[in-house]
Image 1 (cartoon, helix red, strand yellow):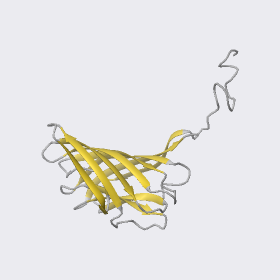
Image 2 (cartoon, helix red, strand yellow):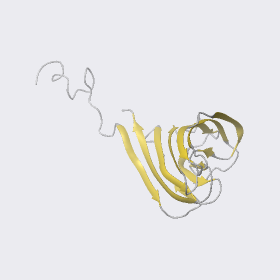
Image 3 (tube, helix red, strand yellow):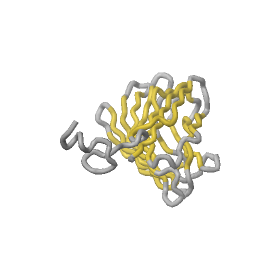
Amino acid sequence: MSGIIGDNIGRGSGVIASVSVSAGLNLVHSTTSTSSVSSISLDNIFTSDYDLYLIHGYNITHASASHGWARVIKSDGSVDSGSNYQTVRHWVNQGGTTGTNDYGVTESEISLGYDVSTTGITSFTAYMYNPQSTAYDKHFYGLCEATDASNIRCLRWTGTYNIHDTAVRGLNYLASTGNIEHAEFRIYGLATS
């Protein structure tokens, strides 16, 4: 093959640069829970291999009407359940009703889900940036979709971060009340080179 493309395939720089096999979106963790449990530990997932993680939680149901929460698992393995999270939430439901909740450093969790029970289901997509950094706060941004017990569908945007300057190695998912009946998680590392 000759020409501008053929002459540049496989080069480390130029018009077409070589890309490493690990570049892009890489599945680093997969969990499915089908038993009634109080929390689900997604531990030892965040490493220095990636700066950005994409987290999918889906097919989530709770034993009773409950919010879905997450707390970070610090590098020492402890779950941070202190009032060390900040949250701004904006939501809109199928009827066009909107609302905003703005919280200061008084939250003890990352709010991910709407009120769902075994008659409703929720899912979320979230990003966590630079969880292994010890110099910066851990930024967490997510979007939640839910259908509640009254069959009201809701979208909720959540921006939350943990204010501790400590490395984070995972997340602990839990319901605000009661148990989690079913949940599936897929976590991907995003490589940029």
